[in-house]
Amino acid sequence: MASTVRAVVARSVKAPVTVQEIVVPDPGPGEVTVDVAACGVCHTDLHYREGGIGDDYPYLLGHEAAGVVEAVGPGVTGVEPGDFVVLNWRAVCGECRACRRGRPQYCFATHNATQKMTLTDGTALSPALGIGAFAQRTLVAAGQATKVDPAADPAAAGLLGCGVMAGFGAAVHTGGVELGDSIAVFGCGGGGNAAIAGAALVGASPIIAVDLDPAKLAWAVGFGATHTVDASKHDPVEAIRALTGGFGADVCIEAVGNPAVLEQAFFARDLAGTVVQVGVPTPDMALPAIPMIEFFGRGGALKPSWYGDCLPSRDFPLLVDLYLQGRFPLGDFVSERIGIDEVEEAFRKMERGEVLRSVVVFA
Ligand SMILES: NC(=O)c1ccc[n+]([C@@H]2O[C@H](COP(=O)([O-])OP(=O)(O)OC[C@H]3O[C@@H](n4cnc5c(N)ncnc54)[C@H](O)[C@@H]3O)[C@@H](O)[C@H]2O)c1
Ligand SMILES: [Zn+2]
Ligand SMILES: [Zn+2]
Image (cartoon, rainbow, N blue to C red; front, side):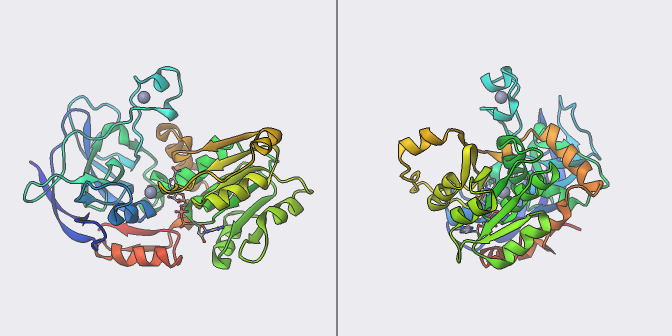
């Protein structure tokens, strides 16, 4: 029997989101239903509501979630009812050319549930990032649900589903940051601070946090930054060079989504260093006009990072374990817990920079 649950829906471009009843079908082949325990509010949810991602309204928002598997469809073997899972937006296919080459983190054919969740009048919903988890129950592909230790706080664990994983992986996977590397992180929101926490975990030094907002820089220190640069007062390129013996950092991470900041990250890097692009540009942005001789002469790499080049089946259980052991501060990304009716208010707090993550919790 399909179930009817309350959920957060963006009905049309720029309209405030509404909480309404939606219909969640029973899982079909390869699908699972998950009773959502907690789901973080991410910028991407606001981008959907603003029309920045597409025009497939109505959108069912929410995608940074943890919960308990309610039912599994035919052929599902990886999870079973009662499992505590974190949802992901890159369920790998196992068959595309990336997967076949042993690089599933780059899978070119990730998949979602085939059936549609709907409004009660039958209108099909577009779930944010193929998840849609500001809902008491949701339907996903089985590969989108990764089993983790149920001792974890769902509000914290769910954040691995997007921004925290993207930031952590940008440093550790894409940037390859390791013991003794110097790193600079531009933009200390949820993504940037997760990169800082990842760099701290693997023993990078120094870890330089760059932001325009002193409050964000104070948070960055809490996540492991050893130095901070207020880019509203100082040239970050000069400051980073000064903090790294005049050379620049081994790895610079752009976690803002701004061409001018990408240019700063490029020049704040040591020879043969790596720039990692985490911030998502808007379609009107162009790469900064960097002379090709600078690109060639400095060597190294410029690497976009999608979802931190993560592999949920490998990374989610590990990061939850590190969190439960007190070695990765996942819980510190939870700024507040809110009800399902408070998502619009959470968008405002996010825009004012007052929170790292507001997390919707379900009773
Ligand atoms: N690559 C991925 O897979 C992925 C996944 C999730 C999010 N993202 C993107 O990562 C970016 C960061 O996400 P977030 O949730 O941390 O956002 P956020 O808004 O919380 O953080 C951005 C930070 O950048 C700072 N900032 C703004 N302009 C700056 C400047 N000129 N110099 C230095 N700092 C500046 C802000 O003060 C803020 O602290 C966004 O573009 C988001 O869309 C990417
Ligand atoms: Zn694949
Ligand atoms: Zn997100």
